[in-house]
Image 1 (tube, helix red, strand yellow):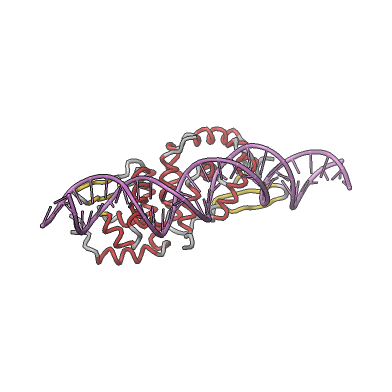
Image 2: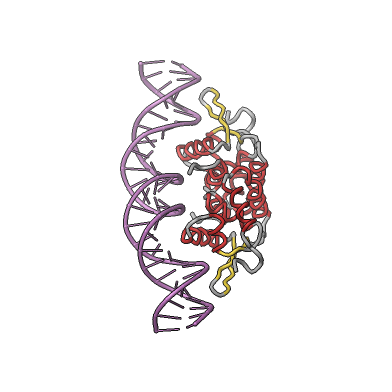
Length: 115
Length: 115
DNA sequence: GGACTATATTCGGCTAGGCGAATATAGTAT
DNA sequence: ATACTATATTCGCCTAGCCGAATATAGTCC
């Protein structure tokens, strides 16, 4: 029985680290080093989860020189849109998200990234 | 790191069988034997997934004599409500759901269940 | 009591997936 | 070339969780 996109997406949301990354990307494109700085997650771990999200079709990658920028894919289906809504709404239910948001506001995170 | 309710709920939605069961329960309360008949899933497997959904706080159980009836919990948080919206919207993205719906309409599934 | 029914749980085996640590890749700079 | 930076991947280990098969529980009926 092959897995549906729906299953993959739910699964992607079910990990705490991935949820944090996805939530960060709600604000827009972000490079790996910013994600690592903000979440304080070891870099290989962040990259692994980003690869997972990429496979699930939830994010896209843009390579520029040495940097890799990720952003959420634009939601094509109503299902995908609702899922993003869930993401926004779980802010108060996941403890780490507040701390991430605070650190994100202090991190440059301009268009153009960590430079 | 303890798991949040959010994580548990997403995880609960990430299994195909559970998604089918949850989708059935959108129509209202249902007993295990109806779920088994409609989904054609082996009974122990259905019970196992129902136990999982119970732990995740997504459904509640009502025991009446020999029968066990399950229904969705009423969504308390905005997050939970959006998640249920996702459930409704993934109908066309998960192949089995159409067949389940067809069989559900042929099954009695009245208030009072399979009897 | 025994037989029957509906549901739940346990067991063993297998796979997915999480982690830290180490290493690889690849672009930039000198 | 070397050195440095950002990111990705691999490795080995461990846990969660899925499955079918078998068994247990528990309520009903005779």
